[in-house]
Image (tube, rainbow, N blue to C red):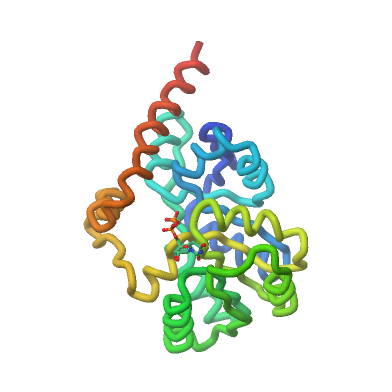
Length: 245
Ligand code: UDP
């Protein structure tokens, strides 16, 4: 039987295709089941090894999806392959499409204000069926209870949280208890890409699984963050060797 989850360094990834997962989320939206989705890459998995609080935050998630080729490769390596990447940006696009058709109420949280405004403009013009439940840029006072209350009152079906790692997981994990409904999903820098402020890798690069390399070339300042990738690979290999003994 295909396992429902594949554990990579103890982080349980949902074993699903993107299309099937989007259907799962839509079903939960229809039933008004509150849901916390983490789109996790190797950086996130590695963070759970060093940071107990962050690990506990991820344990609150209903679903963790494979947001990077590194996770898909690691699953192969441990002998429990995942069918494909289920990335935050791709899911945002699928969910916008679904929201447009079903007239879902969507709350947009995160990014610089001009990026957020451009995102909202594009949503209004390209997805006229969407009901914009509310929006807030990503530079707000975390101790202020106004934002959670505003989100709660807006009765959202879907909340995109684009605050980047680890802020978005910490924010959702810290507030999810206050909400009654909504699919909350962390999507990193997706508003920057959606609004055209940051370019995604050309499709050919994506198909070759070189999106990470494209990002490195475009934003060389990220190189330090990428050092986590070989460390991640080594840790997965070491753990596999230990388990074999
Ligand atoms: N961001 C934000 N609030 C913050 C810091 C960052 O909304 O306090 C936004 C940032 O503008 C960008 C997104 O979070 O749109 C992703 O940021 P980053 O590239 O640092 O995150 P990652 O690549 O880890 O997802």
